[in-house]
Length: 253
Ligand code: G
Ligand code: G
Ligand code: NA
Ligand code: MN
Picture (spheres, rainbow, N blue to C red):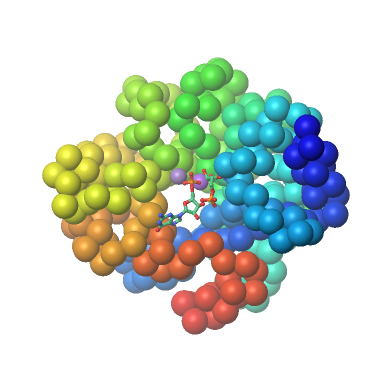
């Protein structure tokens, strides 16, 4: 309860911020987008990780204000970089509660209109387990977002109940291979097999693949050999604040 009221104040007082982790294209190595990640540093300098405050927001009424805050920031910053001549796509994580909100498409409309950011520069990352909570509503929301040219990525792919048959039903664009599989590759033959299988299924279904948690060039080589499209991880950059991201951008492209 303490943390709940602190979080409420933090959203109001803008103690929260949004960091951005670059996503790089495999061929050409260009910066193509970034994942927005919420950060909370309290007035006393304590860092509270999103894995702690997102569940609190979910249990209380704060998930809407938090999501709006992150989406607004992400849209505003992406628009600034677009105006500087860098057409990137910003990806925002949504929890199940946020994603299944029937008002989500209208909220996104309002946020993109306010930022004057076209939908093609906006992406939403959702997990497979959250889609399973209400398949019908999930498909409906995905169609609404797609109609706005917003990209949909399935995050942490392979870690939940990845029923491949659902992939056919969900109108998504991208799979993100979870970093758990990238981590031990190329040494663990099982992880190599999983990475190869995901890339093969994705190619057959015309889905783009982003690998997360790429830390070493050996992992990069494996992913390149299997035709992965985009890369994200400490090999390129950790999540960066807006100033550091701007510096990264100026040197990358
Ligand atoms: O950035 P970090 O590794 O600490 O993120 C931990 C987890 O929190 C990740 O699963 C990430 O997807 C999630 N996360 C980060 N920012 C947000 C956010 O703004 N909204 C939601 N729903 N999840 C987020
Ligand atoms: O669940 P999700 O995929 O959204 O989690 C993203 C989290 O992964 C972020 O909190 C980010 O800090 C972390 N992350 C990003 N790149 C790397 C990496 O190369 N290695 C590790 N260990 N963590 C990473
Ligand atoms: Na994510
Ligand atoms: Mn992930």
